[in-house]
Image (tube, rainbow, N blue to C red; front, side, top):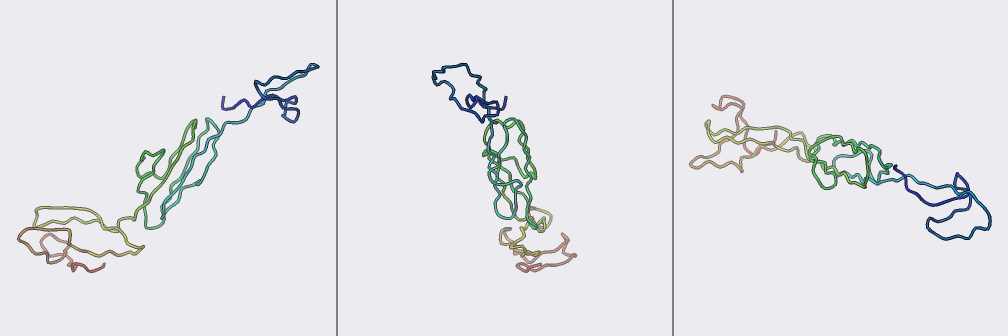
Length: 176
């Protein structure tokens, strides 16, 4: 199990004369032949996109039947977007373990900016929407813009932390 037959040899450690399996030889005297085996290995190709890393990375050799774990680490200001194993997304995970490896595999990680802040937009108690503002270029600030919010018969006048306008006000388009 987990080994491949590679041929015959006159020495148990493989240092003697080698004979190919299935070949025909004319022996003039009795000899002892030893079966030679090599460990079956597989390659797991591990890669990471920009703004993070995977460890170990590159072409990782794993013995047949073994287990191999990988750690996915985003850079500061970023988070794991998705980890793909053999072309199938595993979600935003920070580690993955291959068990009982029997074939070659791939693992790839991608990263995205960590949301700087979350928001909830409420129009007079109606028509709410929510989302996040991505951190841009490693900055710790983000511009508040309302260009994606439209309400018929109303004009956008700015941002406020209280629904009734009594909280902290923020100008549209300003960076905070």
